[in-house]
Length: 400
Image 1 (cartoon, one colour):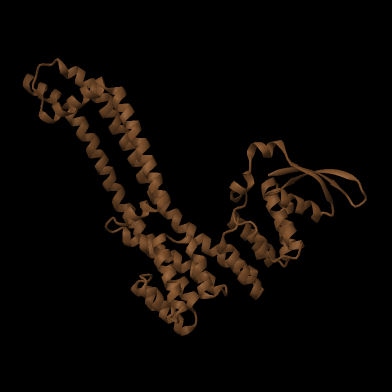
Image 2 (image 1 turned 135 degrees about the vertical axis):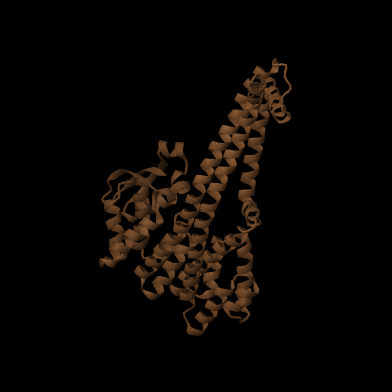
């Protein structure tokens, strides 16, 4: 959000500024950091029209992985955190991103820790990111923590992209097949029904049933369209409700053969996140509390119970096993990690093992499901066409 500010300089000169800030207090802080005294402040006209656009969509102006990669490269080159942010600010042309970087630099120049400056913008930096930066400040190893986060996010995005890619082609098939079927039933069948209506011949009962539907659709087109629109609206509302409450994932999880794979995916994400936090030096209970915000509700309940169990003196493997947060393989790997003192590494290796298993399952599923879906759509469309032409075949047979 932009603010138009009139300010006094130390030598009593009046200057006018336009500042990008989250709110009015942030704008005042930025002006005072320049050694100026605020005389008047008000939002610009564009900001009044757009509202709090920066805070609601700021994450679009700061891709977290790209920001971390660029900052990591500068830190590895020997620059300090302030110098790295200044370099990013100099090359940035987007005004919203520049405002974010300026706020980060302003907080660091005031003497705040980097994690505290990030925590002042929770809409841009998630608790997980703030947590690993805070742990890195204790060990003075920010580059390694940033590298862990980049690797973590890329692995999460890789699995997610495979799932999305596997769903695109079946969705296209469903849309095309459904569109062709609706076109045949809603347009072609009524036209054939008008042709056959005065033929005076007995039609096969399946063809007659289809043509009766065609006549019904031709006479009540507006009613059917209105009913179809209502069904689509109700279905969309129900879908959004299920998505908001997490019910959609629960329904999918009940499907045979898919529910267990979804649980494995959720556990793999839990292991990967915990492993990254533990390797970054964050205590186990703090790491598990941080994870609560990024896992599903079922996993959240299990993790919360596991936290209580660990606080009572139990080991992580025992707490996870008692709360259904393990598989036979991951349980053995957790126990090995506890004996060797490399629990974070073992959690990361468990996540990698299950990521590979999920990827192989997605590949097998798509190779099997796509041909079956194409065959099903072809059978439906072919059946409609054959039923339409059966009376013609019957007439040709009687003439011969």
